[in-house]
Image (cartoon, rainbow, N blue to C red; front, side, top):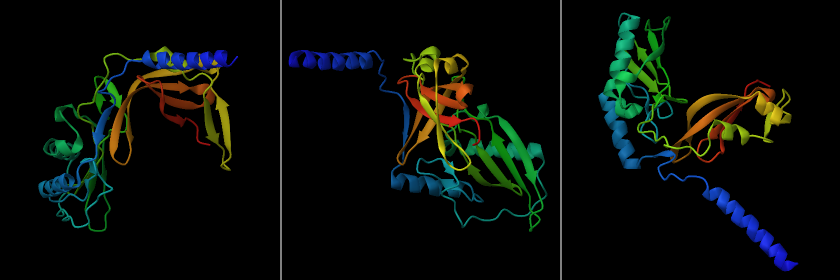
Length: 263
């Protein structure tokens, strides 16, 4: 009897190993951006400030424009006549060109503006343009959370936040195609919270998967204390449980999930 139990356990172990071994492993995946060495980061921050006289934002630990590390000693742009919208957009594009290394932009000519709007009525008579870019695309795949926002106070760039990602790696072959990714969600439990904070579960059933929709590939950045990793995912909407899930094309893991209703 003991021998049978041991063999059964061994068989289960080998099956699990074989299942794992069937997945292609790619040492280049996912794209990983490491936090910069402290001295290198300080040098970059100083160079960024010296290059942009009126900037009131700085660089995060990865060397990208970010409001978290804002500077309090920036010069205030002189009061001028308001820029026109074309002038403001041209000013933003020039800033991106000159600061592309701090924005993760390899090809500035691929930047498209999604929105531009003017704010007035400031106590000092100044004006503020906000210029937003479209999200980044890499090999036609949208990179989530990759919009860049630039604020132009009077006639000078005063603030920037957001970035693109250079050299994103896309595996040549995926372990999980659309249907495999969708099937992997069977019997998964998702959670909602009501107005009182009480949590309620819902299960993704076969029927829920029938009505689910695959909204293409998305590159999903995940940030931790010392690195940013860029995962290639299938975006799957499951309306029966009011959820969107992002499935890693290589591991089949749920990288991120979000409800589509506000509880």
